[in-house]
Amino acid sequence: MPGFRTICILALLIFLLSLARAGTLVQFRTPFGDMEVELYDQDKPVTVQNFLRYVQNGLYVNEFSHRLVPGFVLQGGGYTLTNIIISSIPTYPPIINEYGVGNQYSNVFGTIAMAQLGGDTNSATSQWFFNLTNNPALDEQNTSGFFVVFGHVIQGTNILNLFNSFQYYTGIQTSNLIANEGNYYGPAFVDLPVLHPSLAPTNFVYIDVTLLQVAITNSSGAEQISWNSATGLTNIVEFTTNMPPVWNTLITTNGTGTRMTVTDHAAAQSRFYRIQVTY
Image 1 (cartoon, rainbow, N blue to C red):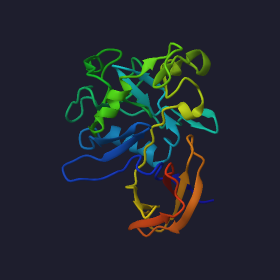
Image 2: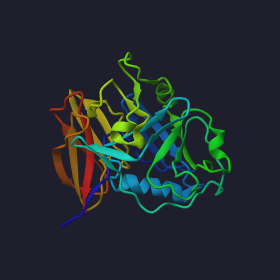
Image 3: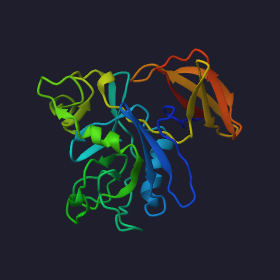
Image 4: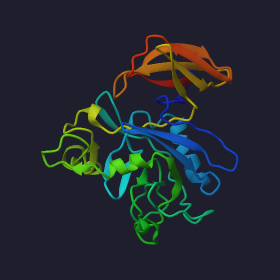
């Protein structure tokens, strides 16, 4: 049976781009807009490759933020939701802590760092967080310190500031809320961000990532989807109009290793796309 590997999750969600004298660029797509993040490949190689491994193997598909503390952090990379079922993301072995490797980066506003278990600096796996303010305590050498920063937002800090405006739900607010659902879902969800006062899956804050350079352009009312194809493998272009997504096949084609383009003549304005590859 051929393997199946998600290479691109949602079009324009995240793209990977190598630049001279710069780190890998990725794009995080949120319900409020996109954030472009530069990763510190040279200074934190183990941490960056670990993060990219989860992306490359499709483990962040349908991933949502499970923790938001305004003025502190926005956390994700721990859980996915598919068919109304919450699942923990399968993890690879923990990685070595690279806080003291290469240049040392502080946990300041706009940086992304790896989450870890309290008291164990070498326990980071799949979970990451964005710093929503300057958090020097996360740099200190104690049971909650040495959190490894492995990138920073280069465009979209306004999105992070929006997360700082979320409020804990008191029964009055109608949008951008934090629900204390520890008793319902478990202790990991005591600071669960939701878009509206309902635990419906459509109200979760999805943050999707992928590695292919995927671009969407509108031409005469149709959507053109282009991407860097995988050579000699079957590339499947899919679309969805729902969140959580229900994927439909638009076209199946053989990758040439070059940039390929397909046109969706029936595209609705709310469609999202992903590219998957079989191997």
